[in-house]
Amino acid sequence: MLEKQNNNQKDRVILHCDMNGFFASVELLSHPELKDRPMAVCGSPDKRHGIILAKNELAKKAGVVTAETVWQALKKCPDLQFVPPHMSKYKHYSRLINEIYKRFTDMVEPFSIDESWLDVTASQSLFGSGKEIADTIRETVKSELGLTLSAGVSFNKIFAKMGSEYKKPDATTLITRENYKQILWPLPAREMFFVGKATAQKLAAAGINTIGDIALTSPDVLEHMLGKQGRQLWEYTNGLDTSPVARADEAEKIKSVGNGVTFTRDLVTEDDIITAVTSLSDTVAGRLRKYGMKACGVKVDIKDPYFKVISRQKQLFTPTNLACELANSAIDIIHSSWKKGSPIRMLTITGINLTDEIFDEQLSIFGGDSESRKKGEQIERAMDEVRKKYGSSAIGFATVIDNDIGAFVRGYAEEDGQTPECKKEE
Image 1 (tube, rainbow, N blue to C red):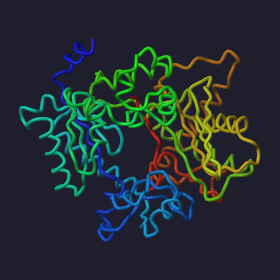
Image 2 (cartoon, rainbow, N blue to C red):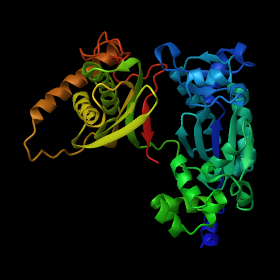
Image 3 (cartoon, helix red, strand yellow):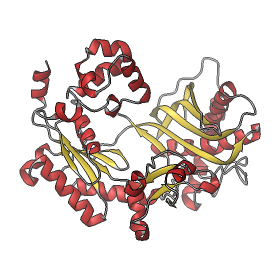
Image 4 (cartoon, helix red, strand yellow):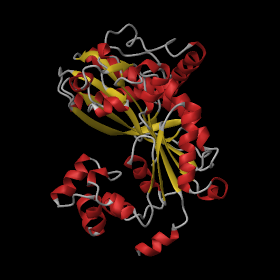
């Protein structure tokens, strides 16, 4: 079975291009004086957004890792230099990078702001082998933009992705049908794409410690342990991924839209929570309307001052893209999941299970005030128009104005340092 399925995919040549320390590398273009010093991109420590978002190679060698706090990073690297994030700049360079990719193929599928898959199967007659194309792309990005990337070349998307992770920075790794067992199977199971910490612990408890161990375990056993993910991991480790690379002009369907803020002080009172939730829900609702989507559910992530995080969600009876409805559901979740008066450092509100805005809504069998919803939608769309014309902070909910917790009036504007959480269908 393995050989038969492998032969069906024999001729595909897939690249995965992964920018090296993307945020930090872009910032270094504006700060060449930091090139030979350890540096990291992070939110403002003074405003408690002190999480490492990216770091350069010197900081990486000193042990600094993404997502740790500033004070943890400084303990490892006392002379670490910090620069604030600029999302508009990263998006600009991301567009330029993907335009370079499109010179080689129209089959370009962005995976994140700094990663993309390319299907170059049909491009080899023009530009050479997959490895030659990857090397040419690396040199082009470096010479035109001053940035480096690592590339994986393989016969499927999963192995191409793992190839781009295998050797960094500024390298190309070729993973073929002949060598993938030698390159990938000896690696720890945790290195397998889609294997997280919890899954790795379950595998280790069963004596499955390497990628090769996963590949050689019965798929039925893995499915019993991990559900559908278990069989999928078995297929991936045996090179059986057949997922296609999307065309560059194919719009990806958004799966969720969220926004989170680390506040300037802990939220303690009910008024604090209402202000924070109103601000975040306003942003999420505005983005949903911008994308022509409605949420069928709401998810709330809560982080306390000790960095403990809980995540809770609920489904909505009627899909919505109204801030007031998202806020009411989020507050219900917080009331049922969080001890009253316990401090909250960070909140994230996400609209989940999205559907098109033209969804044919069914009236509630309990009645429902459709006239009130219609009025609310008219008000919020009017706010959208004001923000488009006069700026994202031109109008907002009264609860949010002049607060002291760092909650913004900003609608769906994506400003520097504020990253929208918009996840695509996988």
